Length: 186
Image 1 (cartoon, helix red, strand yellow):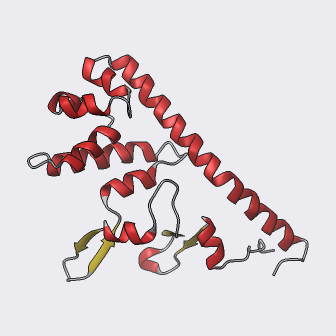
Image 2: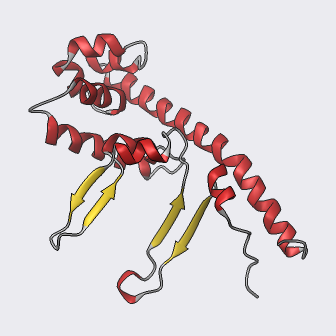
């Protein structure tokens, strides 16, 4: 027997629910596509679109992607596998842009990086951000054991924020499923 499918509509997406699809076409079979109109901690769709990264494919197709800073913010999830991705995204962004850093990028790197290197390169900016991200002092001072513990604590805080964001949405989805099973859904 098929599982009942919960209702779907724009209103649910606006509330923050996500819709997931698995592709069946041979070239992309099994690929999961998530549709979301709201992400925890991110700006409105309009602002995200304005900040997007545009990439052209070899055949001239244009792809509109989240900017790296927005993608990093979007990856802050409960899943442990997302955190190495965040580290890689910030590191790659730094490597690709370090020769001509902007104030905005330096701020992004220092606020999101999981590496101590940046505090040595940008000592003034590090000092200015200590109140926003105190673990930068540990990075600056080379206290790696304490830095690792502080980074782990930072992850746990973000994971808890993510859990709190999704909890009411999950409860609502469970109520929809219960309603469907009992024959009252529509």
